[in-house]
Image 1 (cartoon, helix red, strand yellow):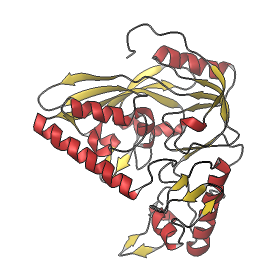
Image 2 (image 1 turned 120 degrees about the vertical axis):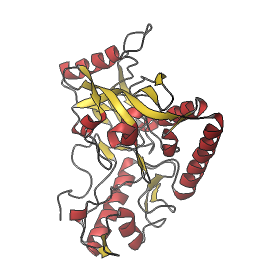
Image 3 (image 1 turned 90 degrees about the vertical axis):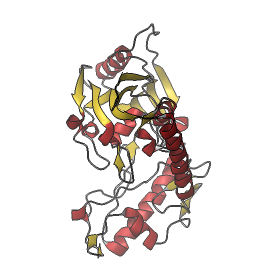
Image 4 (image 1 turned 45 degrees about the vertical axis):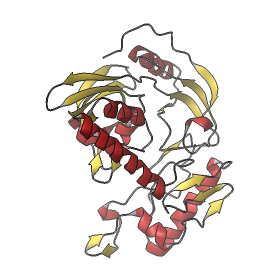
Length: 326
């Protein structure tokens, strides 16, 4: 579905800084940059990349990316399809239709202001709807996939759109089919619950408490969140209480890097061992240097290799330790 109304033609910009467009606040410029506001403009941007044989990256809020200091030698698309509309409302459910560029926080605010429950579980997590679906955002026992009914996606090469059910995404923990980089999300529909004014007020209080809890446990700026993903069962051998120890933060806590490892103006957060922070003037090189040191120390002590959860953008070669090293 394409939103109605007049929109100016797509503006293609050159040599645009990405430093202010990601949560780490590091990285160089994009060779080309655009912000499509309609499906037609998104298609135009994809066509431009294909005609000029440009590498392509679709950027949301930049909350889960690390961008090379050299920038991105291609086209960065930052969708501005920001609409939020109630598609259907009945006694037992609300179908909410949301553009890929809408911020998750704005969607949660809209829901709580319109007596709609479900997404408040993700309060305090930065990102757009498109990026949140890409990574299948999670918080404790909740996954965004639990609330998705269907989505409209666009093909990277042809620009063709189609609407697919949630099952198409093959969601997993921190995983979705979008990570194959063949399709991008244009919009999504969420199956949520209507509620009374009292229930909405309670949910707003819960939202505030979730945010307070997150702020007390994690850094809230200058970071991409968890830098390294948790391990899969087959990747680790350490067993504690009859369970494989899959949590990267466990190993990082054991090697004592929390609040104690730094390079330039970057450091490992004092709040969480798996989160790196730009304290103001850090470069991506600083961040990568720390991340490699963390990998080395964990490998030396435990024999397992940490793998990044964040996306590494614009690097000519893989900047961390060999991801296939065992």
